[in-house]
Amino acid sequence: MKKILRSRLPGAGWPIALSAVLSLGLVPAAFAQTSGESASAEPAPQSGAGEPQAAAADQSAAAPTGLWERSNLLGDMGGLRPWLGQYGVTFGLQETSDYMGNVSGGTARGGAWQGVTEFSLGMDTQKAFGLPGGIFNVSGFQIHGTSLTSRNLQTLQAASGIEAEASTRLWELWYQQTLPGGKVDVKVGQQSLDQEFMGSQYAGAFMNATFGWPVLPSTDMPAGGPAYPLSSLGVRVRATPTDAITVLGGVFDGNPAPGQGDPQKLNASGTNFNLGNGALVIGEIQYAINQPPANGSDAKPGGLPGTYKLGFWYNSNRFIDPATGNTGVGGGPDSHHGNYSIYAVADQMVWRPSADSPQSVGVFARIMGAPGDRNLVDLGVNAGVTLKAPFKGRDNDVAGLAVGYAHIGSHAQDFASAQGATTPEYPSRSAETVLEATYQYQVAPWWQLQADFQYFFRPAGGIPDPQNPSRRIGDEAVLGLRTTIVF
Image 1 (cartoon, rainbow, N blue to C red):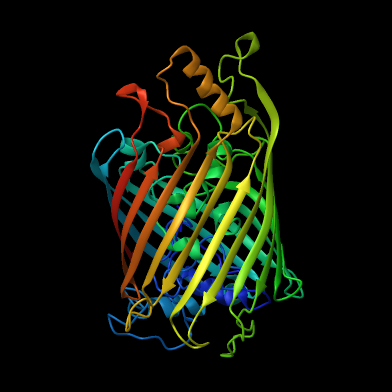
Image 2 (cartoon, helix red, strand yellow):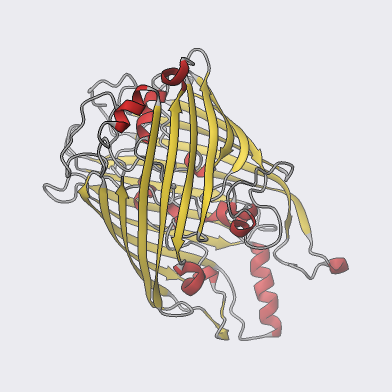
């Protein structure tokens, strides 16, 4: 969830950019994209899992004040925003709401509404009290409504990136410091990994959660990993040796919500600052080509921009073997020490009429694998294409088509086959595939509407229908509408 954001511009100028981002509010990676600027077919340099929802300008610069031109619904709030900005303080408020319904398949027909209000507060320490290169951030959610996926679909790839347990919770709480020279920065505190790792700029245009925080880590990591709406204590280091290369690495608590039961209920307020639950180690290298100059000039790159990423994660906890479940030797489940995954991400613009044209076509692909003997999903793949400015005069609209694939691990398939040996009608499991078509309509810089269609093939890889266990849950067609408002 699915779309939250951190600017990763290299060099000493990034604190100002981040402050501007925070002034608009932060948005979960799985559901970010409420402006054509962020949903552009052109990825920003070293873009994160999600990007700002509206084109943020430096608060010290003149900004449009008309209702339909300004970036926030409430504008500068009678001068409050620029006044706070003088002291390095920025705040944001954003509401994202979905109504989605399955019109065929699933365990039941029907619709569900879910929404999330995200609030954030940031501080540039140089403006606040003279400490250069420091950023403090705190953010939280008020999540409301009902999840269509858990109620009607039972898919592995959740239909909406904002689906979560209704609650009011802390999300992130961290301090980031740029070291002398501006090439390295360190972030310490409660962090959500979907903000900086595994992200795809073009994938952020889609509503299904797998295009934000992918299905493989959300299924295989304890509690789904430190991603919306959860986070973990840890340390992240980022280095930008050149404008084209960024290296990220971090160590985090291995389980954001330890215990038995629903992780989001186990850590219902987001204030369980856990340590001692194993370690999650993650690293990523990013290579950007044909990016806009880092000095902020108006010069356009000669070629088509793209970003390529290669990464891994390792979790030191123990993981139950899906082939044995709770029927292992001695009355307990068989398990394995440690878990890991390797992944690659590519975002590439493939066409635009000219360097200054708002219209462009971008493609993305993301693939990741994990061991099949300890994971429900051992291969996750998603890919898609987006068209920015599909119609004349609609420069910030985005149309997209994408596919997500979740392959069931070999031992989980073995378990399903063993069940079928004693119950011949029991369905086998293979893979779940989702196809999504979406259109983002920019009503104003602060307001976006998004129409969406998804079709799921073999939900959860082919699990039995609880109303008739002799057959699998039927393929599902889902219609959705999202509205996002930046206050």
